[in-house]
Length: 168
Image 1 (cartoon, one colour):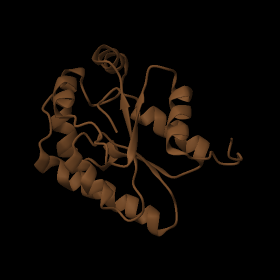
Image 2: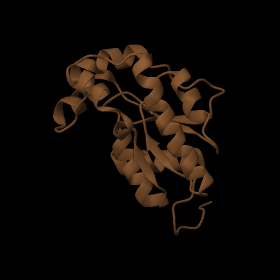
Image 3: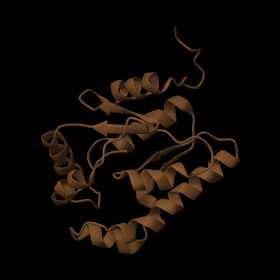
Image 4: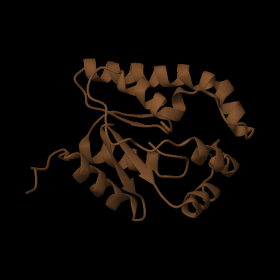
């Protein structure tokens, strides 16, 4: 979880490779109307987000029912959004990726082919509710290369990469 530019997709891709778990990109659950709004620079409101979050929750439940731990790259900016995701079957934990505003803006400005314009970063930061102490998850600063971020996340969550024995 985290605002645009925090590296959610990059981390999820590295974790998928290391853990061998199914992965979904939350952006792919958005209906075309949501993507059009964001592309046009209009932030989504909660009414836009509920069906999107429910679709992600349902995918998580499908994976849990199939016996597959899974990964989703999703902003999940508000606790109420995370509550929807947590209502999926199975255990849901969050990795909150955080970075200074300047780094996030630089990353957003440097990427191509993404519908989220850098102009929406302030609204995302204003909406963000960091993980509360009682929420299952960890906060990771993304001030290092992606492989090191993945190392931090795996260690903080106590996960074991596929094909590797647990380390001491």
